[in-house]
Image 1 (cartoon, chains in turn orange, yellow, purple):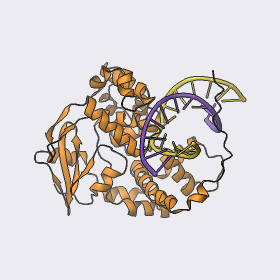
Image 2 (tube, rainbow, N blue to C red):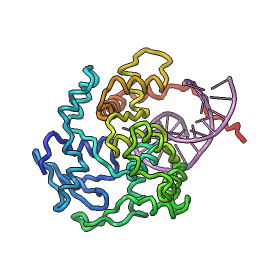
Image 3 (cartoon, rainbow, N blue to C red):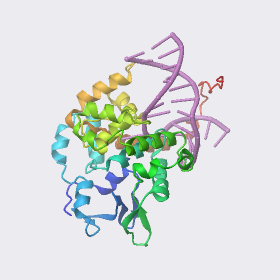
Length: 300
DNA sequence: CTCCAGGTTCCGG
DNA sequence: CCGGAACATGGA
C-alpha cells in the first residue's frame, strides 16, 4: 500500500494504541478482528494480503499531513515536536477498543496499559482471523458483551485494580444499549464528550482520547500529566495559579483545528526527550529529602 | 523501599 | 470553581 509521509514505528509507539508488538522488521497486531502484519518498506506499507483496505483506513493514510502541519502554531517548541514526530499519524481505532483501553489507562504507565490490553485480549477476546509467522494466534479486544458477563473479580485478576469496576460498568452500559458508541458519531464534539462521560471511569481526559483516537475529532485535546507539564513549561512558564480550566481554554484556542494532532506530537516529544534528560541527570540529586507529608490514614 | 504513572470521583471550602 | 484525597499495581 502506498504510504508516503508515514512513520509506522512512531505511529504505533507514541502511546495512542497499545497492542502492537515488534516482529522482525515490522509489527504484528490486530485490526478489529483480523490478525495483521505490517512493515514499512520505503514509501510503501507492506500489509498482510487481503487487509490492504482496512490497514489504509486504520492507519489513516488519507490524512493530509502537510495541511495539518500548516495549521500548527508557529513557535519553537511546536516546531521541535513536529521535527521529532514527522510522519506520526493519528490512527482510526475501533470505538470500544479505544474507550476501553483508555479506561484502563488511568494512573498507569504506557507499558502497563499494554500489558493489561494483552491479558484482556488473551483471556476474554475472540481469536482473530489469521495468525502470525510463528503460528501463534492473536486476539481481538473483548467486546462489551464479552466483558459484561464477567464478574469484577475476573477483571481484578488481570491487574486492573480499581479500574476493574469501571471497565465492567462501562461494558455493561454499552452491552445493554444504555450508551450507544456508534450513535455518538452523530453528535457534535461537546455532546459526544458529555455522552462518553456518562460511562464510569470516563472523565474529560479519557473522553478526549476517545474523540481523538477513535471518533476522528481533531480538535479534541487530552490533557494528561505530560501535556500539563508541556503546557506549563512551554506556554505558562513562571506563571502562577494556572488552573486546568485555563489550560483547556488556552489549548483549544492556540492549537487550532488540528489541536489533537499537535497534542500528540507534543506528548510524544516531551515524553521521549524529557525522559532521557532525566535519566542522564545525577541520581544523587533526585534523592533530596522531600518535605511532602506522607499520607495519613486518619480515615475510618 | 520510594516514586510515579496518558485519571476519575467525591468532598469541603 | 478549586485543591485534596482515595483508589491498585508494578516498572524504574
